[in-house]
Figure 1 (cartoon, one colour):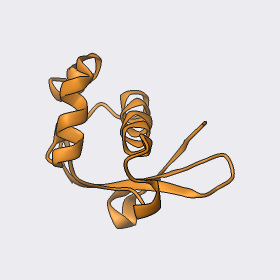
Figure 2: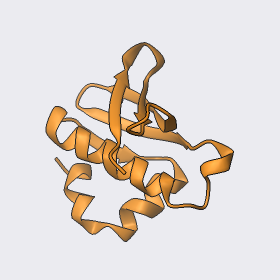
Figure 3: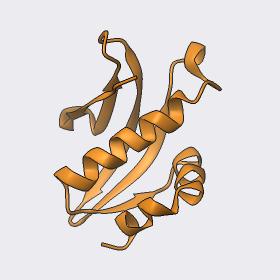
Figure 4: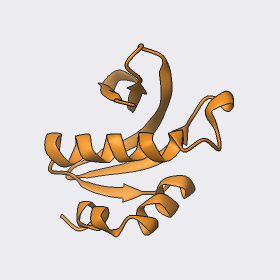
Length: 95
C-alpha cells in the first residue's frame, strides 16, 4: 500500500492517506526551533493491530527525513517503541 503524507501546520499534525484517499492516521507534533516533538499518534480503531500504525510512522519519518532538518523527538509511546525497533531512523533524533 502506498501512503501519502500531508502536513497540516494549522493543526500541528501530519496526516496519512492511502491510495484511495482514506485516512490511515495522523501524528500530532509540537514544534520549537530546530526540533519537532511527536506527541501523539492516532490510527482509526478499525485499522488498529494491523500494522497500519507502523506504516504510518515510517511514512511520516521518511517524509521528515527529506522535508525537514529539525531534530525529531519521539514522545508518543507508540513512536518511541517503533523507533527502538527500527534503529535506521535513530539519526533523526540526533541531527
